[in-house]
Length: 124
Image 1 (cartoon, rainbow, N blue to C red):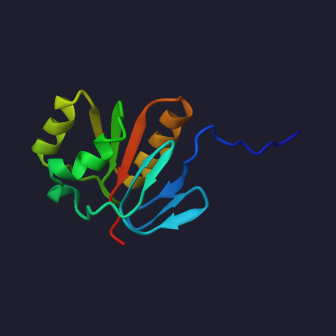
Image 2: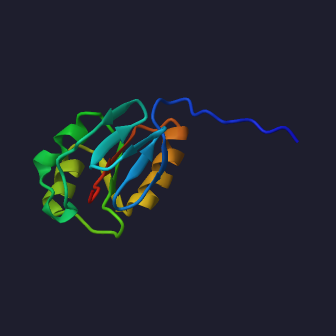
């Protein structure tokens, strides 16, 4: 049996994430970040999903997503309703899940060529 290393057709992919770090391509990140298939925005200033404001989502929405995956850390937590309303007002879906689940979902959607943006809150 022949084995081949599969390379995604997008620039950034997640190898995994938990509540304190994430592995993007071959780099380990320890602070919150935003990721699309072709952009990595490091040092996103959000440290707590429950304190998220609509203006915190400006950098995420600027990447023109059709769906946003919000990784809330090691456990699932939800942002204030005003954040969801700001996304829905722009016609963008917002799904909140743990970082591990958001990483898996991001990779599937990115590999399908979807306009997905993932925002990860890390406690590190």
